[in-house]
Length: 124
Image (cartoon, rainbow, N blue to C red; front, side):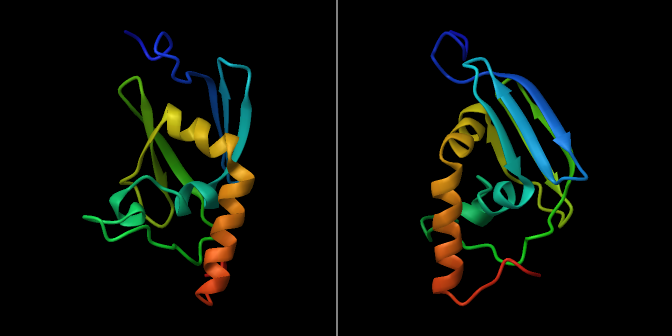
């Protein structure tokens, strides 16, 4: 069974816009997303961000100007994003990128509220 036949989102185009610090991803379902590097970094699926051994999600502050150095394919299901702060352990599946794009506004607002609640800033 392929990802497409299982109903999982499949990208048709991925473009890194380094100067804008944006990852553009188009999917076979017709959806197209512009994902800021900052959002990708603070929502990385890595254990560093999502939490080690049940400790809960970590709030990553100070990444307003984060950039993406490179994208590395991981099989046929994901990419690894190498950020300019050397973070590179998150594997972004197509489904996760689609989820981030679909729910971008809500995810972003939750992140901003978490920063505010902890007295943290997007600025380095």
